[in-house]
Length: 155
View 1 (cartoon, rainbow, N blue to C red):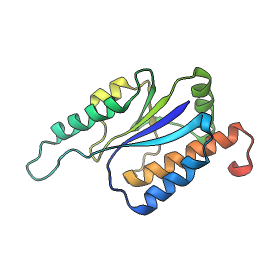
View 2 (view 1 turned 30 degrees about the vertical axis):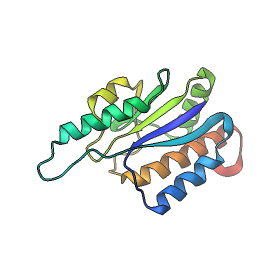
View 3 (view 1 turned 45 degrees about the horizontal axis):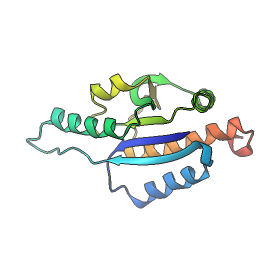
View 4 (view 1 turned 180 degrees about the vertical axis):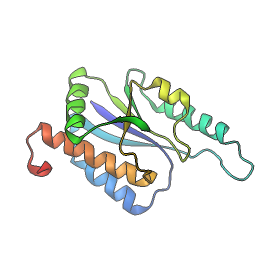
């Protein structure tokens, strides 16, 4: 199984790249975590935000595998505990499907991405900076994997 974190935004600070890579390299080969970065749609004073989001959405959906289970990261989504995530991870692995986790840009995910998703997951009711979300997701996926494998990291 492969987990794709498909996130809007490129040129992250070095600490974001290092943090994501630290946890993604800890994941086993049969549960590989990869990052797919989508360029931010053009925004500015006179920019059309809806058009920028639509452009981002098209690129996000193009990065999703045809048979992937898709999870949209949404502030209004279902909150999961770490234990809930470990159960989700176990189910994903048993299904044999790859998983795509979608993280939108500053204005969120377009409706087309939410419609493609089988579930919507909320990391927090707090507004989190998008760079930090990448690290948080990678760490929580690793933690969920350690729970499933009785690894001492979770303690």
